Amino acid sequence: MGGLQGLLREMNLDGHVLVASLMYFVVHVVTFNPILVIAAFIVGLMLGVVAEKMGIVGSIIGHTLWLELILVIFPVR
Image (cartoon, rainbow, N blue to C red; front, side):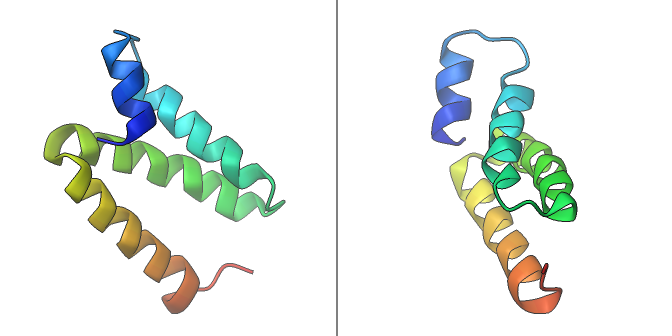
């Protein structure tokens, strides 16, 4: 799992996936692109669950596919 999510989990924080997803969401707010911000929260939740189930490699693969999708296939402007 990701570094922040792992840290929150070690702290026994309930909802650590949700908190990490909110942080991922906040990082994207500076783009001022509402579609990207909402999508980042949803994808953050999905990647958090993937990281829980499959580990960091699964999350890296998912994030790479997400970036390919929004930057190359369906560019968000």
